[in-house]
Structure formats: structure tokens, C-alpha cells
Length: 200
Image (cartoon, rainbow, N blue to C red; front, side, top):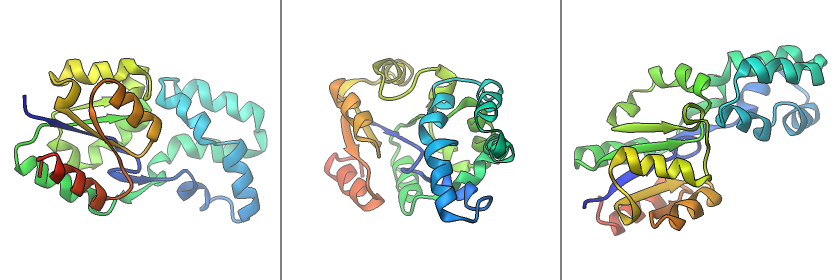
């Protein structure tokens, strides 16, 4: 069976940083750092990736940090501003793989509500046969079940899947299932791994 390629999205296809939004709202760097470490944190954000509704998360957080109500509501309303653009070179690799007829999939930790607001503006995803979104499935990487969902929906498993992600725990979970997995640091490194795998 020929290999399919599975891409992560955040920090592989698109730059993503919560600070990109909140540095517009909090001028003081020390306060911004405290806010990102305590109020709108990546750990708290991950609850939405796992399937919690913003309607539950946002009021709960405002109750804990009422002085930051405007900022917490901005997190829900202006999430796309945390995505600052394509990762250099990655979209070109997607285009080349698509032109070569390689089956393409995404496996992403992404909240379902945020995904619904992000996907329509990004034609790069038209190249993908399927996109497995943690917030839709209500299970997130590196839990084994979400990798099993990719296998079921793609019809590929084990070494027939080439996966790239910027998170080592997610890579190790893929390797535990026999996938070929590349820890993403930049497009040049990914290109070299795809060439070595005979995919480019």
C-alpha cells in the first residue's frame, strides 16, 4: 500500500501563538506574560481542543478573573488573530505532494468552534481528503483513539502513514502505532524526510 501523509496544523502548516492576539490588548509585557501563564493559557485552551464548549469555558474563566472579562471574551471572538500566517515552506510541500497524487490528511488538536471559523478562509485544506479535528471527535492527541480514527477514515495504518507534528508526545504516540513519524521543526527538515521516504 502506498503511503499517505498526515499533517498537524498548528505550528506545522500555520503559525499559532495566543500572544499574537493578546499583545494587542495588553501593552505591559510583564502583565502580558502573567496573563498568558495564568488566565488564557495553552493548557486551558486545550480544554476546547478536547471538546469543551466555549459557552462553558468562557463564563467559568471570567468568574475566576473578572478583571479580564474583555480579554477572555476576545479569546472566543477573535481566535483567528492567534493564527499569524502560513509556516514558511509548508504549504508548498502540500502543493507538491498533492500534485504527485499522494493522499493527504490532517490530524489536529483544534476546537470545533474555532475550526468552524478558521477552515472556510483557508483553501490549502482543499488538498486534504479528510481532516480529523480533536474538538469534533472530543478526543485529542496524543490519546491513541484519535490515531485509530485516522486509520479507520483513511484506510491506511502502520507504516502506510507518514505523520508530521511539532509535538514530541504526539510523534511518539504515532510511532507506537507503527506510523512513520517526523518531528517538525521547519519545512526544509520535513522536505528531506519526505524525500527520504520516497514521497517527494
